[in-house]
Image (tube, protein in one colour):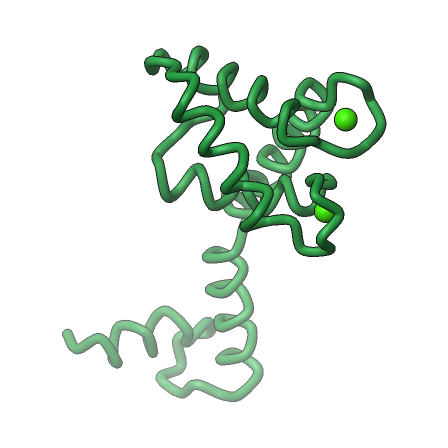
Length: 131
Ligand SMILES: [Ca+2]
Ligand SMILES: [Ca+2]
């Protein structure tokens, strides 16, 4: 069976051998939803929640900004919980680089949105898990 035939059969809801636009649209919508959710949406929600928790624990003076020092502590904590070795040099370099890279508004600190962006990159780039 060709891919095209298979898609057609899946989409032909009333099995009359024809695919009208309404059926196709309904099928397309459910296919798209299947891809976008609920797993993906749930993951994003969980991620954001985890990121907020990480941000709150990293923001030691609770002023809503992460300084390079706060980032160092945060990163050291992440490495520890990931069971990786903590090197002071590596931590300092990472913190400085993170501020340079993700400080979109040049405040020299990371606000939540900037930090969230960083976390998303970190998870995929370095395989660092925050859980
Ligand atoms: Ca702070
Ligand atoms: Ca900033």
